[in-house]
Amino acid sequence: MVLSRIGVDVMSEQYFTRPNVQPVITYIGTTPEQRQMSTDEFKAKFDEMTVNLQNYIKETLLTELDAFKQEFMKLLAGGTQYSATLQEGWTGTLTYRKNDLGQVVLSGNIIAGNAERNVLICTLPSGYRPKNALAVPAYNSTKGRVNTLFELSATGNMYLRPEDISIIQTGDNIHIHIIFSTI
Image (cartoon, rainbow, N blue to C red; front, side):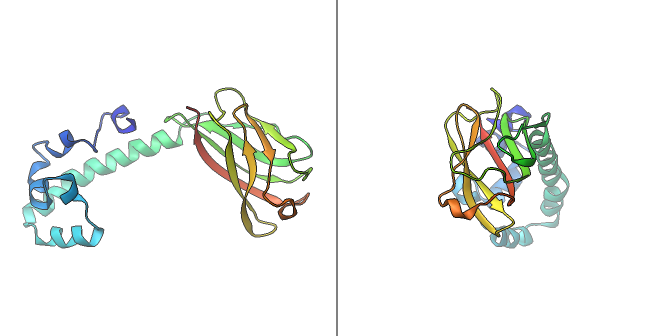
């Protein structure tokens, strides 16, 4: 589990039964079902708590949660970034990297070159490829439309495969940002 990798398993019952968390859990609910509440419901419960319990939440639990958030954001941001080699007259920048969670982040702004269906745009190297083919959504800022324009194969080839070929033309500005797993 991702959360266990950084030494904090906030989703387990073990976390919710830790002595320093127990006074809060006892107050807001002892089962996972009881702990499922909206922000407004929690705020109402929080306002009913004693000042000491409110301070405990603010000073201890929120500090722990903030530290967890910062560690998690580091995991998402990590990884060396590489530039994909664009083909068929496509230009711009398309980068890929593997974050510290093992997910591939494919992102960039590219200008359409050869806009014929099934044209090969680039090939990602081994280790940066999806296990199965996946559709890659993109924003065509020239036309102001979001569409599934590309297919990324398990062999790392990214092809132009729009539903309707008329939605993309040579020279269109395309924005891509997708995160996917390689397993």
